[in-house]
Image (spheres, rainbow, N blue to C red):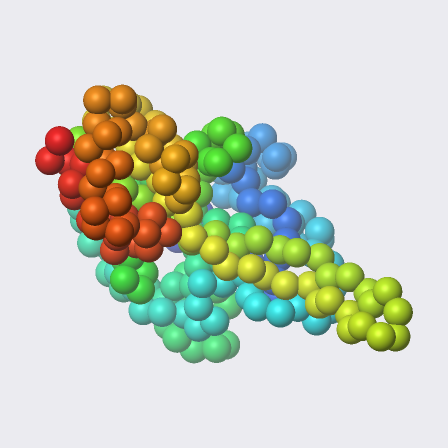
Length: 247
């Protein structure tokens, strides 16, 4: 299995440009293949990448970055429970793409890691896994989430997200131009035992409580008030899920 995965991974890596790419990432394996032509999955992926590169545009001056870190970080790669070794990784959170290299050399061109739900990447202090989830607009999405609390009744997930905001020219000489920017933010998701979906978790107390069964809401509300829980804080949120799993 290990050697098989390594062979497939090498075949399915596709070249990516080092400049910032604002084209929308495919949201599923089906999208990758339906958007391409040709009979070979490998050729399909390469052709998709070439079209994406053609869609790139000159962004000019932009504040921030679509990447979680500017540099490639040495990270461990797994397929299921099997270690596949260590690679240098950079996460493009804007497009939900993991860029990967064998070495830290600036001359080595990065590749795009094929999105597979069996692949896990231990990157920084979290573990990225390609996952299907329901976003705050109640839309089904595919992207990278990190499981940060694995409870028997409830699981808690983290998502690093990046939004691109177009800049605006100054209305007059009295004010400055507003530059385009990449804004980083975090989202949290949860999964309940017996429910085959991962849902967005609001940080507002009222909306947060409505995500759970009526029989636990009062106890949960009391816990949040007594512990002065900030639902936008990861440590507080983890503490809340530890409590939820005792109910």
